[in-house]
Image (cartoon, rainbow, N blue to C red; front, top):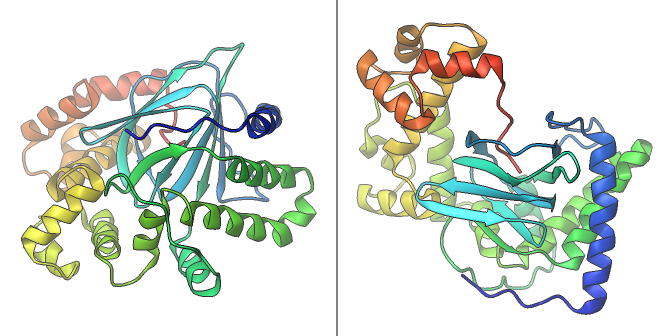
Length: 316
């Protein structure tokens, strides 16, 4: 793990003031336990929670997340990431993860922001702007953390402040979001974003394969076909897929199937066998075993618990 250099005293004071302002805005604008996407800024997600959450399975979309107050743990495959107010979390692909809020109370609720990133905007900025080379990247994962800087936090503060003047958001928000992308491109996350924003790179091809998996997960999976879709050999595809996502293609497909089955049972009230068949399982007993390992309880018991106490989202 890289050792974080302490912020200069002037930046530390400014950052503390920005966090207080952001905390006030999230408390004022986001209902407790109900993530909010403001109509004026639909790419921004605001989260407030007065209680710690148990492990929650969810999909992290390409985006950058800041915790204003509290701490969170994210499990990506075998990787364990813990981050808080001094960190920024960046995800460059659609990544399934298990997350839980570690610090939250009614007196000091967990407060966070997540900004969705557009790969096309990243590519445009790289073409149009004078973006210097990125800082060295610690590892190849498509998700990681780095130290939060004053310029990036200040940009988020100005973006959130636009919610108090929604008539200006349409004109000014794209400029601030472009600044945020620039700050990320010149940070430790820069190489991650460049790989995803640049057509023809291996990370870009893995992203295309992930997009295909998300719409065809119920079909039988031949890794050879998926590698061909990514324009790679099977061995190269396996290596880069695992390096970016911390899981194999089959593990990724299993995650998608189990979470869609869970949604079908909860939202459409399907029984376990029907949901299993719908998402591509041929054996109800195999589905039940894998579901129990993923969610900690057999399908119907898990769904009964969710209906009593709906789970929060995992993002941010």
